[in-house]
Length: 215
Image 1 (cartoon, helix red, strand yellow):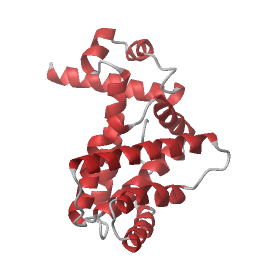
Image 2 (tube, rainbow, N blue to C red):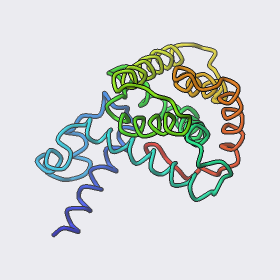
Image 3 (cartoon, rainbow, N blue to C red):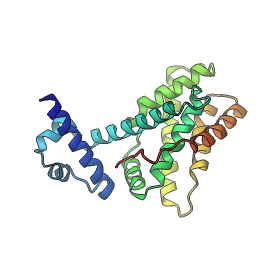
C-alpha cells in the first residue's frame, strides 16, 4: 500500500511538472493535472493540497539535484559557502534561462509572488554559513532583513529581466545577484569578487545537461 501511494504521488507530481512545462503555471489547473494523471481529485489534495505545494517540491528537488552534482564533482574550494553558492546559482539559472518554457514558469511564479517561501530554508542555511565562515555578527532581525532585501531585489531584477529585449548573460546575473548579500554583510569586496570569478569558472566545468527544472 505504501509503495502504491508513493507511485501515485510521483505520478501526480511528474504530470504536474509536464503540464507546467507545456502550458505554464497559470493555465495548468488542478483539474487538468488529475485528469492527465487519471486519479481522483481527492488524491491530489491528499498528497499536495494546492499547486503551490507542487511548486515547493519542484524547487526543493531542483536545488537538491544541483547540490548533489556539485558534491559529486569534488570541486576545489567547494567547502567555501560563497563559492559553492555561486556554482549552484550559475547552474540553476543556466538551466532555467536557457529553456523558454522553464523561463515562463519561473517568471509566472515571480509575477504571482516572491519565491521566498519556496527556497527560504535553503537561503537561510547558505547565508548562515556566510556569517560563520567570515565571522560576521548579525542579530536575527538584521539577518532576516538582509534575506528580505535579497529576495525583494532579486524578484524585481528578474521581473525587469524578462520584460527587456536585451538580457544579461548568466555570468552577468551571477556577478550581480550573488555579490549583493556578502557585501551587505560587510565581507571584504576583493574576496567576494575573487570567489565570484572562481565560482563562475568552476560552474562551467560541471556537466548538468541531465538536470531538469520541470522535465
